[in-house]
Image 1 (cartoon, rainbow over the protein chains, first blue to last red):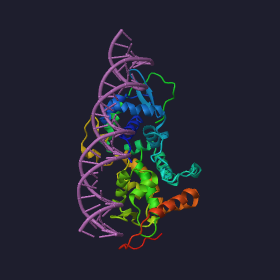
Image 2 (tube, chains in turn blue, yellow, cyan, red):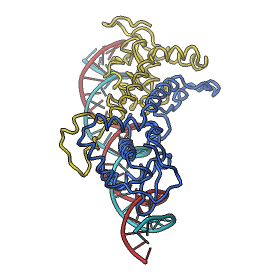
Image 3 (cartoon, each protein chain N blue to C red):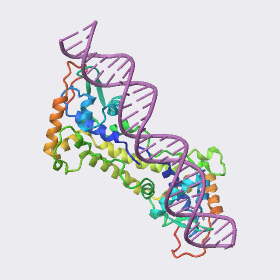
Image 4 (cartoon, chains in turn green, red, cyan, orange):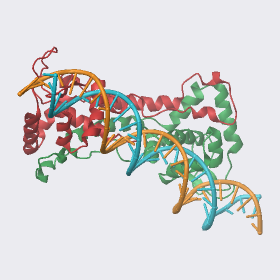
Length: 174
Length: 174
DNA sequence: CCTATTGCAGATAAGAAATATCCACGATAA
DNA sequence: TTATCGTGGATATTTCTTATCTGCAATAGG
């Protein structure tokens, strides 16, 4: 079982975007530079976050990305599902049917007990992820992270965020 | 996030081995046939289960595999870790350090908060898997599964299990 | 002994998926 | 008009999983 590296990038980027002010945006290239990532590849992940309505994108110069809603209403589960897809990690191949003795399909109407058990555990995983809000991640970083790296992050955001002229969406609450 | 197909095979095989009697064994080829799997590949997974002390193997003719301990003391977590490895699904690449501004390494002695959060969720997943005992899987199958497929499984096991002459290990309790 | 069956380890290759790069396009602020 | 930025598609490159094959050690049965 492995989570793609894109998940780590996505969480760090959304956490960074959580500290841009108002409806300002931050270009994808700046986010890539912030974490030493490949810009062209990171855009793919940012795109998935946009498609999942976690981020909003603004085209054109002075464009970029911003959170689509308050960090309090974004969970790590939202991000993981946006990047890794909504399918469960355990996919039942119904191999119980592939034995040498062929049995009528009506014997397999009940779902496989092994599948049910694995999905039950996965629900616990997702429930735990859903408890973790992006705002808590950011708050912990501000409170318990090293002051030097925190200051550097704030400076980086301040340097790259770009205010927007006007917005139909109301100001996001910090 | 995806679990390899080997996990499904491993759980089905251990569940099947849970119903062999006494210290009898069942050959890997029979298990492969039971689920229509590639025998040469399944052996790899059975091997991992043996290395993890979930199964015991007996070489030679009349040899095969059996559970290394009672099904009550085997959890789905044991099996998943044996097949997928013990590393967490989320691997922190410490990309927070890769920014343009280089900061002293002493700023990163505290573990990454994102990593900590993801690992916390994963602990919940593993805890849930650890609650699921192989004996419960088998009991559910016997109680709620379709009688036809259950009978077919029992017949298959009875046909392929092979009693052992003598064993230094005491009889496993059913 | 001898043979047949079985598990084990290693090499290897085919296939799928994640990772990474590039380019043409539409939108837009200056 | 121009330069900047996000979007989407095409395409490598790498990595991991899946799968197969071979030779070897162990051992039950004749």
